[in-house]
Amino acid sequence: MAEKEEEAAKIESFLQWAAANLGISDSPPSTIPSEHSTLPRYCLGHSLIVSNFPDAGGRGLAAARDLRKGELILRVPKKALMTSECLMRNDQTLSASIKRHAFLSSTQILTVALLNEVNKGSNSWWSNYLKQLPRSYDTLAGFGPFEIQALQVDDAIWAAEKAVAKAKLEWEEASLVMVDLKLKPTLLNFKAWLWASATISSRTMHIPWDEAGCLCPVGDFFNYAAPAEEPCDHETVGTCTNGTLVQTEGLFDASAQRLTDAGYEEDVAAYCFYASRNYREKEQIFLSYGVYTNLELLEHYGFLLNDNPNDKAFIPLEPAMRSLCSWPKELLYINQDGKPSFALLSAMRLWATPSNKRRSVGHLAYSGKQLSFENEITVIGWIAKKCQDILRNLKTSVEQDKLLLNIIDKIEDSLLPLELEKLPSICGSELYAFLESHDVANGEDFTNLYVSQKSRRSICRWKFAIQWRLSYKRKLLYCSAE
Image 1: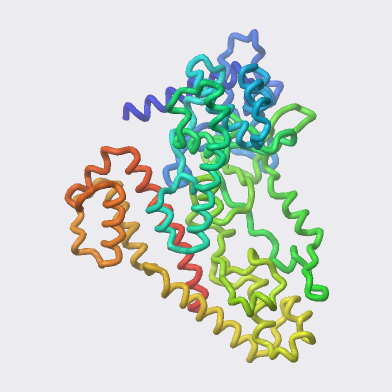
Image 2: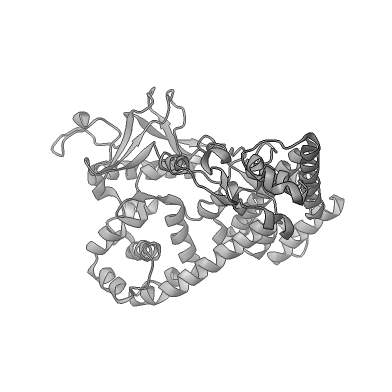
């Protein structure tokens, strides 16, 4: 209880500072107290309130009253946005060091600048904002070898290994600048870099003058909701002309419309947030900042959604099939509901056609038409068998993953010790591997994991890995059962 009260007091202090020093407000401009007013200045309360949603993202923003679709609900002035530009303008040492090392990317520059502000402690003008940032993240770059292997699927393992390697390379490249800035030793290590880069990856918002984006105080309190599904593949990719895909204008229109509930507006020099639909009082308000699969959400934001309409299970094709297919690999997948994508069906219909007839029916296959009853039976049978083969080759089943998640919930609730010898062998093996990765000899010592914050973070990432692979397997299971 004391911890919750302390957190609430910290947030209250931050909100007062954000209003008084940054000019952030959820009220119409005409109702904002002037700087000479004796009225208390709060940046929230008219349209939004900070609330806790344990099952929907944790800390977030709720409606302080009934809100109408399209209504302006939060305004963050340009001076309140933490950008590389403003940080370097106010710190000549930082600016000079960055200029001496011109090889850094815009994202690396903002990451270094963030660590430089943390290094200043209470002397940083941004200290009130920095204090309330999360202390850790669960992005893929922070996954250890055990958590990476727990993903089980080759594509996911490769994505995680690539994220870790990229983070290490960027840290090594930026180390010269951070040493030049004389950052504290604890801010020079890879762990600190992972925290700062994850902060940038998961919390920045788009601005037109810097590819790295900006950190937006209060605006980054909004939790994410997946946008509605994009139009079907054939509506956005187009048809095949002489074996080459033609991309239609609709694809660009869809991308341009993804961020309709927030954006930087030059005419008012502020980041403005709008209600994307009608909200009732106390209902959580979500921000939709793009279409992501669960693996992409893990990579960039450190979370996933149990019911993500944009999630996909990608299906690898044999080389002979790929040679016949003009569709990009990214379009060959099983949807969240277990249905094959438009591109996957089209490619398989053409593959299942005798080679001497493919040229004459190619335009029909690429337009989404069924070629014949027999052809469709062959296609559906092949896809179902492919899903079954993939499931069979993975280390654990859907039921075993559900059991492991239940065990992890018990671990998190401290309902221990667990008798590992009573668990199915495959589940016990994964639990033993986890124990060994934390230098724990046996299940009787499992409670010792809670002494280490590092172990708690690993448990959380392990859980994410199992949740991701379970969602992947369910899509294949749904498809093979149809």
